[in-house]
Length: 261
Picture 1 (cartoon, rainbow, N blue to C red):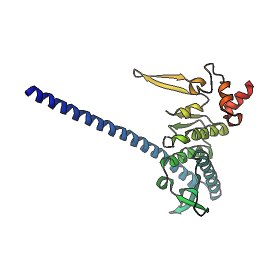
Picture 2 (cartoon, one colour; picture 1 turned 90 degrees about the vertical axis):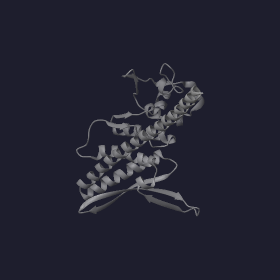
Picture 3 (cartoon, rainbow, N blue to C red; picture 1 turned 180 degrees about the horizontal axis):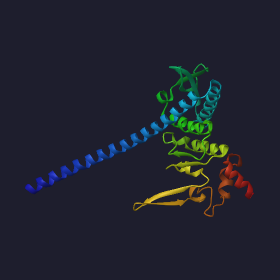
Picture 4 (tube, helix red, strand yellow; picture 1 turned 135 degrees about the vertical axis):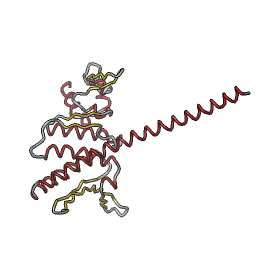
């Protein structure tokens, strides 16, 4: 009888232990998610503070030019990445204690039931989801690189870009970074767990930790795009011909396809 009681007590303790372990794991997951959000918010704040400093240090004429360039670049990012909304980015300049200040707004246009266009403006940190803030954050970074004088040299680094952007927009976000790299002729280094961002790079590496040692290996086109490329690294012409019209191919693949026709 005593053995049965001890067995039942042990079973109860084990069940309680497993329950608490599950609760701990859930809290650790939530902690990691919140730490990632905090790190992203700090990075955005640092970038926006740099924009404030830039706008404060230049003349009124230059300030208007920089303001227009930033608004145009961030608006282009919003329109090309979040394609199911018509949004624009605006900067409202003001003065506080004799110093120029800037307030950001995202203006989204909706069609009301009356068929009239209605604009809704708000602070992106307060009125929009994290995806919009994420888009603004990584669009402002190249703005700072290109507009700061003397111009900042070297590559631009992105650490886990687009983490808060919906998965359906990842390809658009990756293409935006790709276009910036080509237009600016600036090297872009992306650290990511997202295969979409890795797939648009000219060169991709995978880092895997084994037994405490990090192994780095360059990925082939076939590993990145198994449906589009063959193991030999050449375009899979059967897949291209059967699935993708020439007009819908990405520029790099279209160029390679035309070379082989």
